[in-house]
Image (cartoon, rainbow, N blue to C red; front, side, top):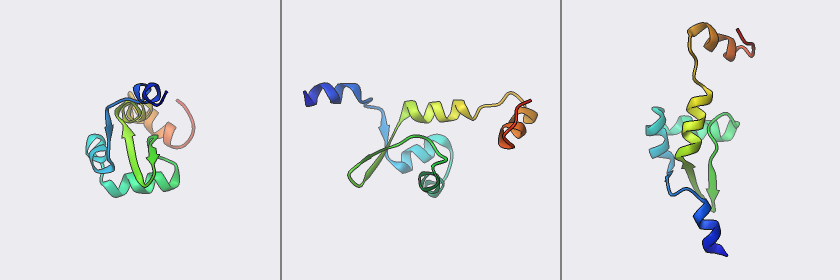
Length: 80
């Protein structure tokens, strides 16, 4: 049964420094985002924090824009 649960978890997980490098941010930025709830999804296993690559990719995709106007509108909470 435990083996079945392990199979559903992606093996592509990263520690905070690896995830920060993958996203192009400082480790402290991800730590701040975790506290404020603004960053990508993460898993806490005891004291260990891990990020799935798929969650990091989803975070990047959700913050993608096709123009600076649409990016500014998204930051202000509106759409253009």
